Image (cartoon, rainbow over all chains, first blue to last red; front, side):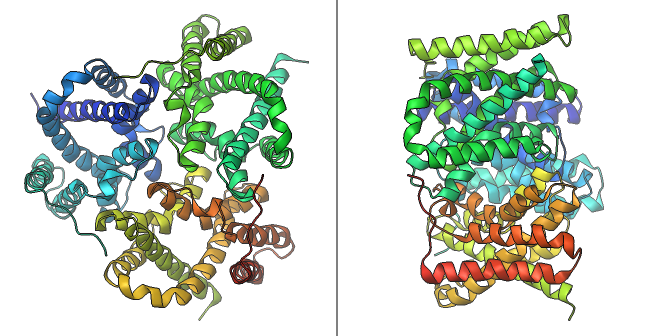
Length: 203
Length: 203
Length: 203
């Protein structure tokens, strides 16, 4: 299996897990199955969609590749029907979620750079790709976005993204820069969760 | 009167009723007249605007046709000034709202297909066109979108949209496919409200 | 110093103050420094970003000019580190905020007209440019947008914008039309705050 193929499978798996996590959040808020499905969908595609709209890449990405629609539908249905059994899978889901976030950051950066935008903007858009699906989900279920209050994984994305932005120009197109940047994101997030790290409050 | 003309009048009437309903929702939330007007506006155009942004049809539709601005202003002013009398009109408003939702779904699908997107995406964007004005309204008045909790009309839109997506290719451009798809949406919604149907919760 | 230069400095100063005010709002809501920074950012660029997306000017403006990113970062850092001292500066901040709102309205209108859209749409987009950063901020901190409830400054923007829309065609490109329209916005807002003006509620 090619490395590119592996990355594509990670992309789809991450999308699947994002869709599931959206449905689970919605279920806890007493939404019906339509509402839960919409929340699952926007959690999975929200970050990439906001990035695409901001950089001007329309129609947005998921409209052009039916693999995503298929994987998201599968994630939504799995969460709807196997809701009660999912708690056993939290560890597995956490792994795929974390790897997915790492990859989404890098793919988001690459797409932004393709549009001729600056590395600084690419770092921002990479982080938005990974993190803002959850922000849209939280706005729709009417709560302050979790990530603004205590999660540390946006910081992990930013760290990996900055690494990529600095190293990429020295080894253009080298896939190991991608892999290493992802590893940084995954490592920081796993450590942060284990040690219960949190960013300081402003006041 | 041509059928196309009739559909345009339904479009404008639906927009008018959407604007009114937005203002009414805002009034119940103690907004001032500026806030109520903005909510009326986004309720009327929100769904189509989100569709246009996602498929890349910008400037968004309502900017290019002053009929919409005129009709929305009229709907907002009517609701602001005749607020107390509106409760008597609920039945009439419900009819126009339902017919409007049916038409918005179909118009949203047609525009999406014009952009070369797949029938699956067209079903989604048709539903978004009809339903997401209310979602934006609910986010702005800070409540969980009603449609995610108990309304069944998104399901009605999806059913009519799927019918259209399947039948249209057999009779391309035939206006009766539009009319029949709208009839399905209207029939399901009216029945759903009468019988108090609701989608099941996930858990 | 050229007048154009002066306007650019006002633009950047207004952006700086907007970013600060976003961070302050977020701090009151117990967000961490990442959350507060994001809120500062969207408060500063949110209005112009929504305008750019709606009229189809992508990539959105702030991605193409690093001055904005620099000024916003400075505003966020100032608010994060000098949080406790800011209360002394409220008067100064109010002045720059008010002048900034006046300028953002006019710049937003000019950009909208450049895209060939109607003066009515330009009035709306000018107001959106000035006001919707605060709306996005309020949605993200999960409260009903302040401006929909009691602020009167949207009305000030609309008044100045309508003046500009009417007078500009008679003196095309004359910078004094811009200055005078800004003066109207500033005068109405300052008077409104002094006299505690508020728009009536609909009911």
